[in-house]
Image (cartoon, rainbow, N blue to C red):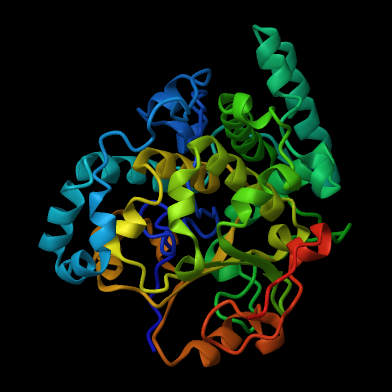
Length: 433
């Protein structure tokens, strides 16, 4: 049993190691990857040479009429077991990666940009709310109105209306989303030492925002607005992919069925995102268009960050890699699509991850982790839990509470939870086999 202190963006999830880098910063989650389109010098959160960021109007998704795997050598997938066994050293990993048809240096550069934008910053002249969240909400709404009035085109004004955000599907409002960004700003401003350790689970819980009228919370509203601006620009950059049809559970359900994915809460109220790559139908994922994959993860991201438990207590990501093979994993998505989904989840959404859990890791994944971990920030290197084979039941209970909070049939451990969050809201059932 080994617990490694490193909060990595679970960017690995679909492009690199679905698991590890899902943590970024002490909380900007990641999982799959979308690309942020912010060029507004959003503090250093959006300072990147990435085309999507330097040109908010450009789409960050490949043209669906083109082959999304063009340039990628996917012939190795059929011989995955044999190839996976040969990726047993950093040198072998680099050699195998070169056969994918993309540059390792390019990918490293992209991920450094993603990770570097995970945390927010306080800047000189920032506006603070000194009387708590309600005052912060009013100030944030005023900043939005100013941004609308200063927009040079009708398209820019429309972007600020969040017209592609699936509020109705989640029973939420624009104010609910703004509250998420304000809470993110508060938690982001506090060091890990301020975490709520009354939660005895691994990773603890978010810093608890004061609701006292005598000691109201001081909130950096400008920081929340910068993060919100990143979100607005990013959503606008992919708006054409989200409108036809409008983003909803019904429209993404076919894509969701491809993944073994569950969403629950643990005994501390933290939101838990479970992903089992071993039970994910990677062949069907490769067969669907990047547009559909992006729609799926945009919907899931909203399910996560609009959840009050995630906002107030934090996010836990549990990734069962299922000993997935190198080629099977690396060709699940075109690398750039994966990176851009990671960027959305890590650098744009207002989520704070408290723990990233990785289990059943193949050798190549451990090598990839070691190669990528050098550029992670110290804040990112706080909460990653590695579960070794045979320790699953014991460790998962220390992470989420007990077996009643672990989804049934999720992996080879003793979970008994039959109904997850998606089932409660949309009627999808966990199948017991």
